[in-house]
Image 1 (cartoon, helix red, strand yellow):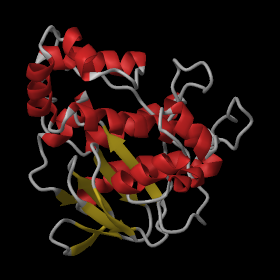
Image 2: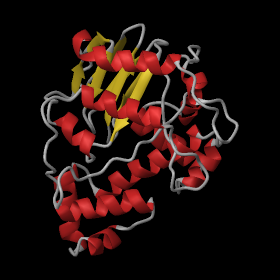
Image 3: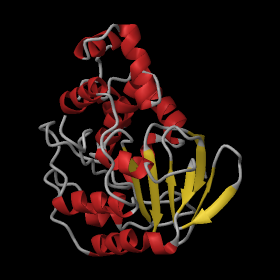
Image 4: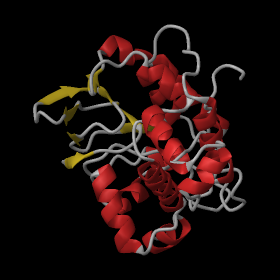
Length: 278
């Protein structure tokens, strides 16, 4: 069982066999083959060895805004009818071999179909084309992740609601992958004073700028671990003080040890923050 934790991502968990159990802040457990957890919501879950996929969706990205428009509770259990399309795509994807990874590691299809990973569904964390060290995610994985997120949304995609000054900073962080950007530097990008930017950012994004940057660092560590690097290497790549600091933060935000990510494959799909031209 993963103990209570909270992170700044919409979490989608889909099981292809046994149901999973999830509990919110109230401690009440519910079972389903699919769940969606709101960003920054305290939750715990028990996958009991279920085989499936776990998606972390940036709530500020276009797919995140679309999903949040239809979520009314911290934790949403998904009906079988609503899961039909994502489950069908996931089953097809795990049954079709993919080309071997460029770095010689086990390919994504081989790794996601390892059913002996205890307590957690296979995780699909990501690679970045801009790093120069990791291969681009396969187009099949890109399409799968987007289709799953969009199939669980409803209605037309919402128009972008974020203040363009916040969007500018978020886009800069995503494109540059700058993990050391200070509040003052971010405020300068937005042409605001640090205090005004801090207030606007928290109002728009839902958490302090420093906490958001900690989550970004954690996602960079996830990518490093998913590409077969050690915990110590991941800590250095993501600008953590050391492996112990990364492990503490990982347990706090994800509810499990970072080594769990070595049991699955991670695929990151960058998504725009704007859904309409500015």
